[in-house]
Structures are given as structure tokens and as C-alpha cells.
Image 1 (tube, helix red, strand yellow):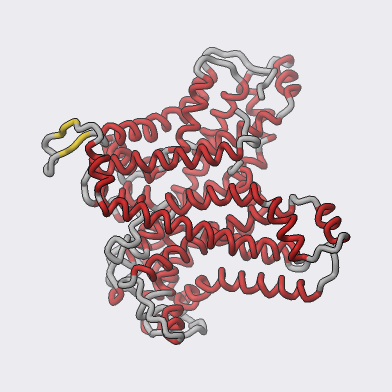
Image 2 (image 1 turned 180 degrees about the vertical axis):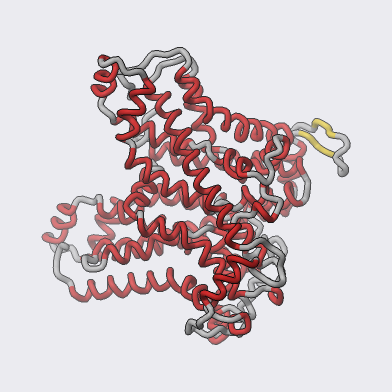
Amino acid sequence: MEKRARFRSRWVPYALLAPQLIVTVVFFFWPAVQALYQSVLLQDAFGLSTEFVWFENFKILFEDPAYLTSFKTTGLFSVLVAVTGLAVSLILAVFADRVVRGAAVYKTLLIWPYSVSPVVVGVLWMFLLNPTLGVVAHLLRHVGIEWNHLLNAQHAMILIVLAAVWKQVSYNFLFFLAGLQSIPKSLIEAAAIDGAGPVRRFFSIVLPLLTPTSFFLLVVNIVYAFFDTFAIVEATTQGGPGKETEILVYKVFNDGFKGGDLGSAAAQSVVLMLIVVALTVLQFKYVEKKVQY
Amino acid sequence: MIERRPILDAISHAVLIIGVMLIAFPIYIAFVASTQTAEQAALAPISLIPGDQLLHNFATVLQGGASANVDISPVAQMMWVSLVSALLIAVGKIAISMLSAFALVYFRFPGRRLFFWMIFLTLMLPVEVRINPTYKVISDFGMLNSYAGLTVPLIASATATFLFRQFFLTIPDELAEAARIDGAGPIRFFKDVIWPLSRTNLLALFVIMFIYGWNQYLWPLLVATEQSMYPIGVGIKRMIAGGDAAVEWNLVMATLLLAMIPPGLIVVLMQKWFVKGLVDSEK
């Protein structure tokens, strides 16, 4: 889509774009190029000399069992977050779409966790599930579960999934609700007249019509689990016990920023970039009808 | 409502109430813990009935640093850092995206497509994937521990630019034509036509960007190396770093509540704009 009416000026458009482009180049492109460049360099232990090594860093990375484990951990984590998050929010949205009385109140109460920052969510859940003090951990002990996410890898994973899902439910809920409300009432009414009950209507009409929303949310949730959960992991398990919950973004931070292994961190960054590119392409392929270039 | 089904209605309310309770439960526990004394909050399990120490705990953390055992700045100061950064990020993002969207829509000039794609590409470069090199740029510019360092690198925004671009494209061409016939230049047109028309979008975007700014964690963790520049998120993490014995949970939870209040209020009070902003910025 193009505008017919335009303004003419040699310099105004450049001046208007300048702030955005300067920030973009200085803080996005330049560092990204640096990361690419560093990913093909190998630095000795003291940072005294660097050597151009082509794809050596990537080779080392993909031969490193710890990295492959981190990949699997991230995969498992994002699938758990996406599936649980979508299921819970879909159920809530379907019922919220039904009720008439109190709908606005439910909506308000369900959407505000979006505003809580990941680090706060992490600390909150850690307090609830603290092995010695936590209220939920205490309840679990009563039903015979000895909760300890500091020792038990499975518990640690459940902890970060719970925290991540708790925060993301509100977002999914809003989009599902919007999706449900855009389904034409006439379709549902026609099915009701034909004798389809609420359950049948849900599976035969509502769910298929929600497919685009669900697919969109699936991608968004995977992106969220991959990149926006750093603070949750940092505040709760810090990748532990051992490296059992060390997701990819946390590993980059750990190896590069804390550990000082620049070559490996840069190679990891490049791999992450490729993942973002793939996910963004997926997302924009799907929403391309809404965005015009 | 398609048909009357009282049982299904009852189930709906039951499910929603359970959902709301599950969402609210952690916050309730945080609230309870923050109303107790340190000894009460260290009991296992803590009592589920609120105590009377809420204001006292708020006052303690706001003024004095949150925990006797960990040395951190007063929470009031950290909240100030968060507030200033969040406002700078929200206003900065909106300002530069609005200007660039205006340029992309209302002008034809060499490089337009290239610039568009450059802005688009930033979507694919989140902070998480370029931690080390970006940190190096910031430190080379001497921007560590400054508001500029905390905010400027975050204000480039492809989403906001696209949002404004989409919106500008829906503004009728006749307005720009009329403005040109009347002799208005681009700046005048922006000020008198575009700006007033954009208010709704502006507010919606502001709500989303404020929350985004307030909730930053990884970036300030890198840039703020001095305590005086810690935003609240980084501060909270520091408070629990001492291990179980050293943590005064009542104070930590009071700080948590304080950290949640500003963005929470914005979502609840500006819900309409919030929902619009959230839905729009994903298009």
C-alpha cells in the first residue's frame, strides 16, 4: 500500500529516520556483526592472541554434550511452557466467553499478571516452593512429595515451567478471548438449532476456527520460552541443579558474560540468531495478511 | 448466549473462579508474608492470615535497603531508577518510531526500502543473542551506570514503527493533499494532523512500552554495575542472593509487592489501552 499524497524534501526523511537508524546500527547491527566475527575466532586462555579458525567454534560447540543437553532442555522447556500455557488459557477463555455476569471482572483479574516482571515471578514461585519455607512445598509434603528443586532436576524444571506459564497465561487468554469473540455467532446458533450440544459445537466449530490464533500463540509462546525467560531461570534455579535447567539464553550469559569464553558465546549467539530468524519468518509468514510491506 | 444451560453456567463460573484463585494465590502469599515480622515469615509454613506489619515493612524497605544481611540501596531509589528508565524507554521508543514511520509513509527517497528492512531486522536481534558485544559498545561509550546506557539501546523498535506505519497508511490521502494545497509542509502536517490523530495509538503503545521498560532485567544486569543504578528487578535478585538463612522474606515480599504496583496499576486502570496495545503490537 502506498500513499498518493507525499511530501518532497531532500533531507527531511533522513533527519526523521536518523535517530532510529543510529540506535539500530550502533546497538544492534554493530554488536551482531561483532558476534559473527568473534564466532570464527579462537582466543587463548589469557586473551592475548586470537586466531582465525573458521567454523572451529561451532564444531566444538556441537560436539560438546553440555550444549546438546542445553538444546534438549530448552526444547523440553518451551514445549512444556507452550502446551500447558495454551491449554490453561484456552479453557479459561472458553468459559470467560460464555459467562455474561462478571465477565469484565474475570477478565481484569486474569490479565494483570502480564505486568509482573519475570524476575519477580521467579522470586515469587521460589518462595512458594522453597523446600524449607514454601507454602506449596509444605502442602506437597502432606501428600507425600518431598519437594526440593535444589536437588531434583525434575522439580527444578517444573518450577521454571510453572513460573513461566503463570506469567504468560494472561497474554494467551486475551488473544484466545479475542479469537473466540470474532467467531460469527450465526455459525454457533445454526449448529445449536441442528441439535449440536456445547461440547460438540466446541470441537466441530470453535476449535477449528481458532486454529490461526492457536498457531500464532504457539509461535509467540515458543519465542517467549526461548528468550524472555532468562530472568525466571536466573532468579530461581540459575540453571541448576547441575546444568539441568540451563536453557540456551542462560548458557550464553553464563559462558560468555560470567565465564569469559567469548568464542563459544559468540558461536552460541549466532545459533540463537538463526533460531530467532526461523521463528520470525514463521511468525510473519503466518501474519503476512495483516502486515503489508 | 445461545441457550439456557444453568449447569454449564455454574461450571463456567467455577472454572473461572478457580483460574482467578490460581493466578492470585502467589500474590496473596506474597501479601501475607509482607505483613508479617521476619520471625513469622521464617516459620514453615507461614500463617495464611495477614499480620499487621505491612506499612512497617514498606517503610523499612523504602528507606533502608531491604535486608540487614545484604547490602543494597533503599527500594525507593531502585524504584526511582526503574520509573525513570521505564518512562525514558516508553517515550523514546514512541518518539523515534513515530518519526521514522512518518518518513517511511509520507516520503519517497533513495534508500527507503533498505531502511525499512534495517528496522525490520532488529526484530531478529534480541538483547539475549548479542549480550557480550553490546556490553562492549556500551562500556566503550562510557555509558555504564547511566540512564543513557540503561535506555538508549532499548529504544529502537520495529514493532512500534510498524504499528505507526500501519496506522498512518489508514489516514485518508485527502488530508495530506488538503494540507499541501493549503501550503503546509511536512512538519506542520505532522504537528497539526498526524499528532492529534495518533493519540489513541500513542496511549496504547505507551502502556505496553512502560511495562516493557519497567520489567527489564537482563539489560540493567549488564549495564548497572553500581548499586545506585540498580532498577528494582536487579535489586530483588540481589536481596535473595544470600541464601536461605540470610533472606528476610517479609522484606523481600514487601519489595516484590512494591515492584508490582506501578505496572499493575497501569494495566488495571488503563485496561482498554493495554488490550489495544497488546493486540495491535502483534500485528
